Length: 375
Image (cartoon, helix red, strand yellow):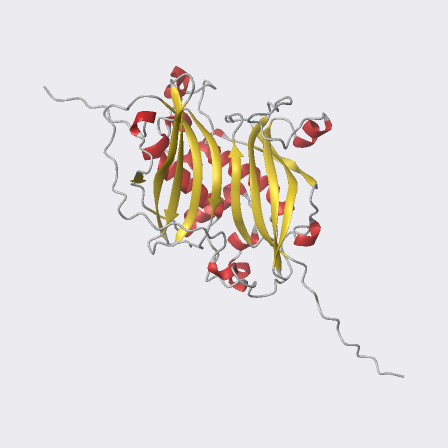
């Protein structure tokens, strides 16, 4: 009699070993079509990732791939080995984009187990991994830490682990080589106004007024575009039969994060030079198809980066089905992290994250000499 095997992917808590690395099997060449579809789906306004001319003016050979695309590929590639059995994604930690990569590059990813910790009831555990995304030349496109909640025990009949021998060397860089010194060229006009160094003061709160309703077909298409294989996002039978606390498919969190950051982009990153980091991110509640997302931003810090640029630190939050302005007017504590919050929780909050952006400083235009003849 033929053997029937049910092959499952991902891991339970007992399958993780601290210090081990897993090479994820996905190997994807990101072409212009994939990049354009992703960019159009989110309408992120950051010019260096949208405009070839703007990118070349800064010294890049072409427009780099969007960091939001790279983050989503990194998380999704890792699902196969790390989180396909996960109950929930808990946190984004120390996300960096050290080198520029471009359409035509082939991307792979590796994850290393940093720590594991069982919950107090012993039924589940938290796993902390660091994932590295690199291209065919081993240029490191994205480094991201994340924590996931997984069941305890071991997974029977799981697929064999991949070989991690080719894992790239890690880096602490936050800027590509093109931006580590002086900004190479003065920026020409264009882009979105109000997004330079001088336009932000620490403590400012920016409410981004336009919302975004998530369509069912689009979140499914984008989830598969970035190769996320978790049934929580794809399998309605799995979701209805108890796999989802929402009773239906849940929108993949990387997409929720990308929509919220993009909703904020015209007012925060509309002239930005680079995404220097994301940290302390979480999804306090889930999003399902039909929910409408809104965003708000608070300026946390500013730091100079030479005479041409500076880094702004933002706290960005996304909420669902109630505009952020209405929540703020109602006195909600929107920018305090939900985890461990002592004040009332904001039930509408779906994502929160700290975002660091390199932005240009105002360019000093030399006075035009007078053409009048002296008296």
